[in-house]
Image 1 (cartoon, rainbow, N blue to C red):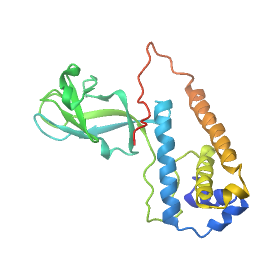
Image 2: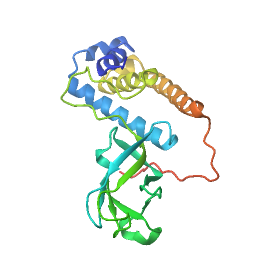
Image 3: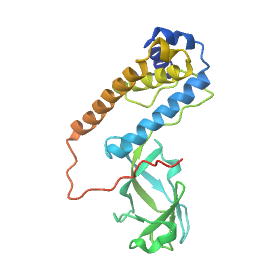
Image 4: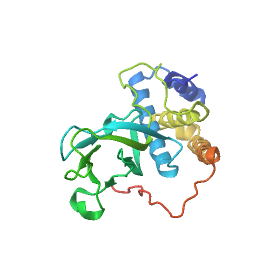
Length: 227
């Protein structure tokens, strides 16, 4: 049975008796924090493990003779990260994704991204008409409705969803100006619980099919430190 936002809220309240002061918190505030927490976790997962939270979908391009577009924003579940070589033409050939300002960086067939839309260069995707792509990508949970109820399901598997309990409890701690004096070690405890669970998630993802075996090291996007 899928864990709901209400279940997470109840779990976070139970992590510290002082959290009962937040029992009447507005659903919109709770949902905003859970949305942020889910997004952050899946960003980390997309960087650390490329294939466990991955999906394959067929997606059609626009209908034209050239300069067609492919809107990755219509994928469901939504995209977090396109896998390298993950745009496959009906012929089985992958489209090389290049920078708009360096379109000659790869051989044809190519496309350049503008937001979540991949744009064809010339007519390199083939004959006139709609092109049905196979898209391989790492997904993220669907966004929570910020104006909805706490009956919405969270996007994490149940066995790891307590991560969100810890995250929401950390938020409670930050809102309670007296907490650092009343319980100075709470943040350390919550961080330690989350780190242990994070390692469990990574180990589980690796155990399912075993470690990835490849002949080369794929690059990953570095976490930005810019404001």
